Every structure is written in structure tokens, then in C-alpha cells.
Image (cartoon, rainbow, N blue to C red; front, top):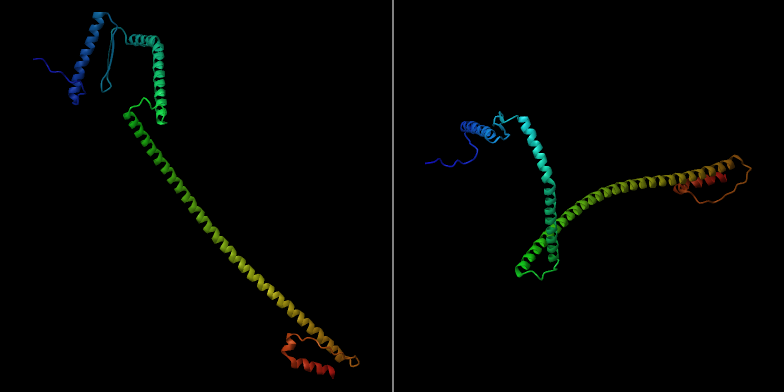
Length: 249
């Protein structure tokens, strides 16, 4: 009975993995050597183990094998690249044209145009797409409106706060103006009272000087003149009568 088929996957057990690596590495290098000898081929094999150890085989020289490989790869790419590049861009252009055509057709159908070739199922599908699109647009619109409302509320709060601060400052200025007005009014009343009392005292002093001059000069004629008494004269009429008698004598 033959051996069963081995599943090609990573070996979890490190010991088994190392044993398998050693066996298969030896077999691979042996096959490469046999191929170089039997077929007169230039063969190069490079192997790195999981621990980083290098194993290699070259039928002639590894440097010559690598140089030959690089040169052959470069020549191969130069031969196939232009053709492949042209084909690639042609395929891309065709795909883009097809996508553009499909998008234009879908756009016209969503605008309600060119619906003659659609079946009931296609029309139902188009209607569902439009309803989904409308719901998405409404959700986005509501979101933007809510953001604008929040921004306006924030600005309104800031304006209300600024208005309150300005009202406080206006009230402070108004109180200061009232205090200044009271001080100015008090000062004005004081000045009026002071000027009135000064004029009354000056008139009394002049009258007293004239009366004394008459008493000192017995030959001077006596002139009696009635005048409106001031506040002080009205307050003390007896004193004014005595002064008149003094003048007559």
C-alpha cells in the first residue's frame, strides 16, 4: 500500500520542521546538480533557512548565474513591456468608456429620461434607489440645519452675555452721572446762597456806614428813605425802629 498524500503546509513542530528541511534541501541540491550534468544546463540554487543560514549551488559560478539571470530578465522585459503596456492602456480606456456610458445612462434614468426600455422590475429598482437617495439627502439636510441652529444658539448666547455686560456698564455710568449731577446741583445751590447772602451783607454794611456818617456830622441834612427790608431786618423790626430813632435824635 502506497503512502498517503502529504498536505503542503507549515510544520508546527520545530524538530520535525528542521528534519524535513534538511531532507528536502539535500534532495533539491542533488536534483539541481543532476539537472546541470544531464542536460548541460547552467543551474543556480540559493536557499536560506528559517534561522538565516545560507545554502547554495551553482553549476559554474553563482555571480555568473546571477548576471546572466539579470540580463535575460531585462531583455525579456524590453521585448514584452511595450506590447503589454499598450494592451493594458487599451483595456483601461475601454473599461473607462464603458463605466462612463453606464454612469450617463443611470443619470438619465434617474432624471426620468430614457425609461422606455425598462421593465416593471427595473422601474421598481430605480424607484427604490431614488427613495434611498432622497432619504440620504433629507438626513444630510436635517443634519446641516441642526448644526446651523446650534451655531445660531451659541451666537445668541454670546450676544445676550455681551448685552448683559453692556447693560451693567450703562447702569454704572448712569449712577455715576446721577451722583455727578447731585454734586453739581448742590454746588450750584451753595453758590447761589453764598452770593445772595454776600449781597445782603454788603447792602447792610453800606446802609450802616451812611447812618454813622449822619450821626458824626450834626449839620448834615437828614434824609429819610424807606426801603424794602432784607430778611434779617424783617426778622428783627425792633432793631430797625431803634436805628431810625437814633437818626432822628
